[in-house]
Image 1: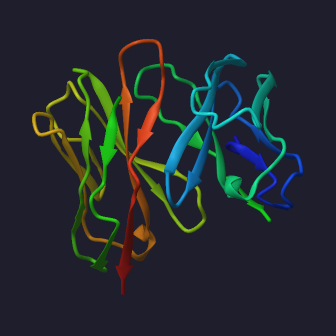
Image 2 (image 1 turned 120 degrees about the horizontal axis):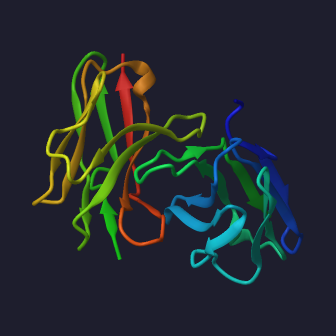
Image 3 (image 1 turned 120 degrees about the vertical axis):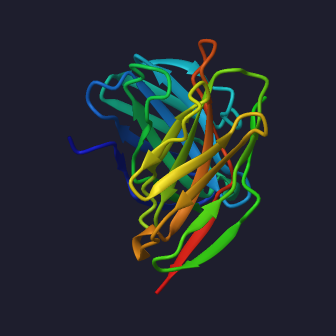
Length: 115
Length: 116
C-alpha cells in the first residue's frame, strides 16, 4: 500500500483565495483525520470522519474551514477565504480502528503558505 | 479535557549514547493509550511505541522503551544506542479509550538532535 497520500505537498496562495487540500487514506481504513501543525499551537485535530461521516469537527477554527469525504478513498479540506494566519502544515491521517489504541497513519502533509 | 506536556523543547545526545524524553499528562480517565510519534525532517509522522494504561509492563520496541508511571501520570521515552537517524521531533500523545469519541491529544514536541 502507498500509505496516506496528500496533495499538493506545498501550496502558496494569496490572502482571500480559496485553498483545497486533498487526501487519500489507506484502503480499508474507516477513520480519517485532518490535523494542523503550527509552531505556536503544535499539532491540533481539526476534524475526523468515520465511514465518511464527520464525527467531531470541534477543532475546525471557523466557518472559513470545511471538510468533506464524499467516498471512502477521498477527502478534502477547504479554506475559503484564506488568511495569512492559516499558514501551517496540514496533515491527513487514517486508521482502521479495529481496536482501541490502533495506530494512526499520517500522510506527508501539505505546507500551506498564505501571503 | 486531557492535556499532554513535554517540558523539554530541545535535547541533544551523542551518537551511541542513551537519552530520555519526558512527557506528563493529565486525565481523569482510568484506561487510555499513550503514544510516542516521531517526525523526522521529512515531516512524516511515524509511530515509535505505544502503551496501554492497564498494562503494568513497560513497552519496548528494539532500542526504544518507555517508563510508564501511571500514578505520577508520566510517560518518558528512552532511546538507547542513539543513531543519527533518530534526529527528529518527538511527540507524546494521549488517547482516551472510553466513550465514543476517538481523539489523539499531542504534546508540543521535543526536538532531538543526535550528534556524531
